Length: 631
Image 1: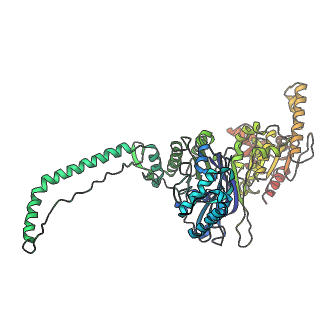
Image 2: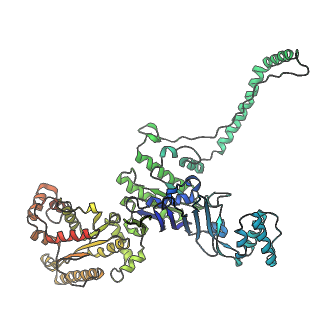
């Protein structure tokens, strides 16, 4: 069982959004667009009793007369899930939908899809017990074949309806009914242990969660891991022994003294009244056996320190590690239940290397189907994105304009392998075969950008980034534009399709490789191999131009267009022939020991930063058109 889809209405900045969930779901986007709000809306849905004190301004329009709602669809229901959820699952379905509403008056209601007998609907929607009795009797009179028993009480009437439905499943239809016992609002919490949602907010405190309490994180782990029953039995026996010893001590030390005092007081009172005896005795103190308690501390360089004395990064790691352990040692780890671990800014306080490791460790149980474990992040870090699994990314954006009295519209972009394959039809033979190459690229960083420039290699990227950093040009980074080295011309289309499907505008810069034949000949290659290379360059140019919607040419000339730019051959001839002083600048940097003068990304980056002469017009046009993408 897992969360497959969530629809949120009128919750803070989210007026009406739908989010599809995977085993790993990554929410990305600028600050303030609603990434964390998605996770907090789910926390309200699942853990209402501890987070239901919503303020009026938690509604989208700041407390106006609107209903707040969260709808959650579950899929991959097992036979055990279906048995527990009962009528909330349609026949032969592996899905279940539950809604939670908060009305304008502050009341909260849950409802879910179910299989019910339509004739009973008026009885179930009665306003009170008296009206329900009347409607029940009307149904009983109008449909005697149903065999409903006489009305005795509201509880008995409800049970009679349920019993009839259980005995006649073939007569039931899909419907929506009020739910009162799924998450522990009243009665037995059916979902407890069946599906748990654990939210790690950015302000979650390790010092509070490391206590041995039933609501604290470490306390929950201890409850599921440590068996205290034997120790508690021994302590109860010890308490009884102490109580018996207490009575012996009182008997030995106080009996004679208290008897003498009681006799004396009785005699003194007898002077004023008759028939009363005074008795003085030791008060027996009930010795209540204490519950076994555990403390958590950190041994750091042989020094035992409390959790709150550790660094923020370690505290954050401890929290998420503990939650992962809770999932593994709880019902989800045993295969009997499911858990969704939702983390707000998992990169918080993490060293980059640690963040990368963190992301890898958390993905493993989620990608293991036997674990029944989901992970959802709201993150700003590319370390928590696997570009090869771009279909797990949910890119959230928010409009910069809204009508008066309205909130700016929030859009959630996502895509799938099938969507990308459709966009690349007849252009890329196998998307899945190239995903490893995409994952190894810098595409993860581009997913956070407002636009992306796709180039073939590292030197192209270095020149554009170095040039854009010059004071005379607007920085790409300041506009949220990323330059991505995709690792070759044949990878451009796939990277472009992924980013475009996620709503990220792209600009493509590629080489026409017209001089490829001369270079191959200078290397002494055979005529057959030379022809093969030339044919390959032609084919790659035609396929890429066709994908970009341009007219196909074997070897297109140097030119910049609205969405792409092409160099007739490669970047090097342009730099050497049209950028005054380029060759000398590159050689000087190489002579200083920072690299070689031939196609070295670091040397090219430094040269583009340092050279004082104006760059070629082609490069200036490229940067100008790239900036137009986000204007």
